[in-house]
Length: 84
Image 1: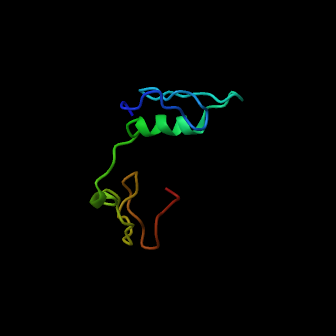
Image 2 (image 1 turned 135 degrees about the vertical axis):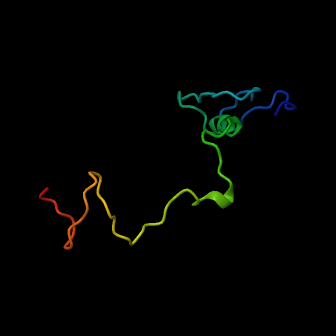
């Protein structure tokens, strides 16, 4: 956009500046075209993940029963003993 001189936004009619800024319509609302221009110029909020690593850090649910609970007790033959 730096090569544009005196370019105007079709929506609000204001000059497009470098770096882009939020211009306002006559109603007081932010110009949607200028808003998109500003957002496109910003770096991403979150780092992107390589496409092959999308599910590598998540664990698949296991069908195995746990052998101990958080307190270190073991289940009785019929299941977990909740009375203790």
